[in-house]
Amino acid sequence: MTSSLARQSAASTFRGLLTGSSRHYSPLLAILLILPLLILLAAGFVYPVLRLVGISLSEAAPFEPYRRAFENPLYMQVLLRTFRIATVVTFACFAIGYPTAYAIAHMRGRLAKLGMACLFIPLWTSVLVRSYAWIVLLGRNGIINNLLLDMGLISAPLKMLYTEGAVIVAMTHVLMPFMILPIHSALRSIPSAYEQAARNLGAGRMVAFRRVTFPLSLPGVFAGCVICFILAIGFYITPALVGGPGALMMATLIGQQTIVLLDWPFAAALSAILLVATLLLVMVFRRALSFSKGLNSVH
Image (cartoon, rainbow, N blue to C red; front, side, top):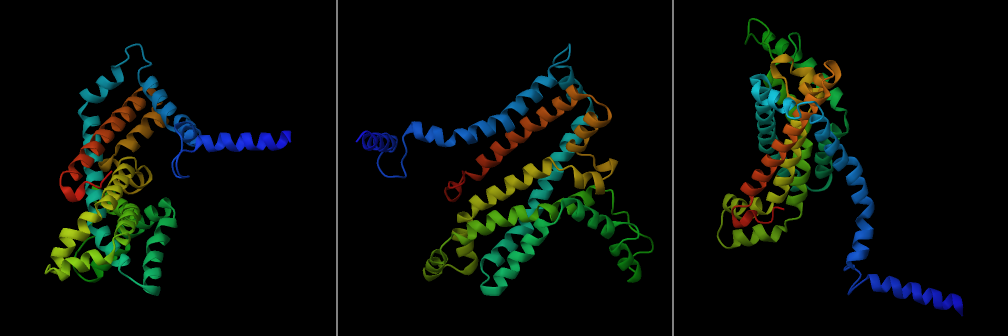
């Protein structure tokens, strides 16, 4: 009798945590459910960021690392170059990735599986391997230079490796799947009846795409652009291998400050500046994508 009452009491307590249907939880149960994630976020992100800011302010003159970063033109040039390369890479990924995602989303059967395999196989390959592959392709004795020499288009090997162009090409190749996947998911979720209804009302194929399909796919475009931009800003391996000193980026500079020069406060200040600038640009980008009615579904 006592155990039965205990079970009924426990069941009553559990029902009290739920309000309405099973999809609506009480605030207490909702907090308990997301508590492990909050603890993980605090330990893995919030504490390291606060610790980073604390290290940057740990010197006798707390803001001296920030003053050095803003007064020396070299560091500002590296910061601007990082954002320029990340922006170009993001646009390149979008320009190539959107048509690719559109084509894969409209494939059927084995052809669709083949398209997805072509997308996932490079994603499963190590970034280090793909970066070394570009060294083989773009080197003075690489495949591209040898092909151009054999065709008689050039008389001497071109300098393609260790340039900013090599960094952009290699990073675009590495980050392309992160643009295609969210756009492909957004395109697959759009009912084909929408575009068909627009065409039945007299719109041409291009007009139906511009007025119906493309606006509805913008959440995927926003997600892909943000992922590519954030990853491009923090890229370390590829710029270090194919870029050289002329294409120095912030991640490489921060690595030099921490590993070679052991100047942790200055490296922390550079990291904090990069983090704040990145957050501001993402907020501006999201705001710019939410101007028109068709883009209001971007969150």
